[in-house]
Length: 255
Image (cartoon, rainbow, N blue to C red; front, side):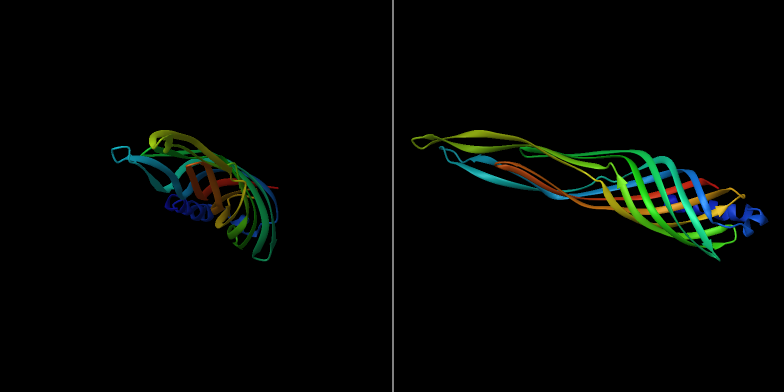
């Protein structure tokens, strides 16, 4: 988050440079804006990849050895992006309430592959957009305002787990004869994240009678997704917790 916090002095500088007449202007009205952003995407994977191998003890003595590989991984990565917003403020005294909707576009793709005895799996996450619809409530100090915000979030984030499990089975050949047989399974499951929630805050400074500079910091949580697939004797289960941390610095045009 430190990369976002360092932009806070921009607001302080803008407040100092804002003309004196801006202090008497009302915050009430509609606005549109554009922003640059950093989106820190953090899917966290936990689960199990289950398969089996055959151990040859000699003299036809074949036994099965089960394997249960624990899946633990983080697909953390920060990507630059940008987008736009639209909103409305209503001011009463020094208090300001309103709402804002924004869309941010970025490019996030993360692949994590793990290979172990007779099994390989890949964790894949991809997202290119984030939209939020939020209420805002703040306190104005002349041309500057500090606000808290919260609402719903939407994204096209998709998490996919694929696995190739080359489990083996013991084949009864009759008359006490046993052989080793393959049981290769290509397993896959995918979940698209649609809706979550977001909370955050920020500040906004008027630099003229129409323009303002706004900094918004958001925590976005899309909850958990459960992925599972099986083809005996192989199976996997995974639980993915998806979060984003977003910093937006932009310019608003008021009407």
